[in-house]
Image 1 (tube, rainbow, N blue to C red):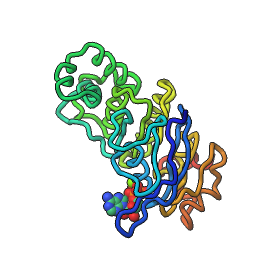
Image 2 (cartoon, rainbow, N blue to C red):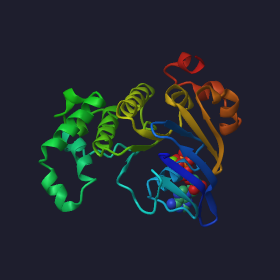
Image 3 (cartoon, helix red, strand yellow):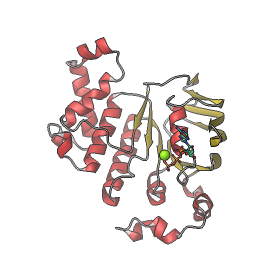
Length: 255
Ligand SMILES: Nc1ncnc2c1ncn2[C@@H]1O[C@H](COP(=O)(O)OP(=O)(O)OP(=O)(O)O)[C@@H](O)[C@H]1O
Ligand SMILES: [Mg+2]
């Protein structure tokens, strides 16, 4: 059984073709980075996988079931941290348990001992156990994003999607957050699909890469198969050295 199967997926918004006959299959436990310039279809692809957007043609299957509406068993981390600033890191993480329950169940669940343990475990996974009681609003952007990841982990989905989870962070924090995302996925055996702008981070953390251009799948490969030529093709005509550098650590990009 594949974790995610995308079959001849086309998504149109009026005249705009956001995704154009995209097909691929992802096995359980893979850590996949989605690459492509702005407008290439990355967000649309992730939204079709968790059922937030419906295919115009083709189909998406998660664990062999067709995705027909929003799925709670696929958790999503967004670019903006989306944490509740007035609540502690711990309470934010705990809300992940609520999103998989219905309303009445949620009310009862808020005091569920098992959920509380899960929230603490998730905070530990993202290195924030010592900050559990801190108000999210007082935390740095990177820490807030880790709280967002903890909340997604508490949902206990087998599939974790993240749409540019580090786009608004400085290079150092982006690196830290990606590190936690990758180790969390590994520890918990999750299948992950992460869209990224930063090619250097993609190369550092990605295991498999899916490249989109104009809504078409133009690359699908593992590790070293993502060569500079492929990147050049995906991002065409850019200053490669500048593009690959993080600003803070130029050596990183050339390793
Ligand atoms: N809800 C929508 N309504 C109309 N057009 C849309 C909608 N969502 C996406 N599009 C269009 O579909 C194309 C793909 O957009 P998408 O947001 O998936 O790209 P992206 O790769 O995520 O870009 P970015 O890197 O800027 O986030 C773009 O041309 C975009 O304008
Ligand atoms: Mg996007």
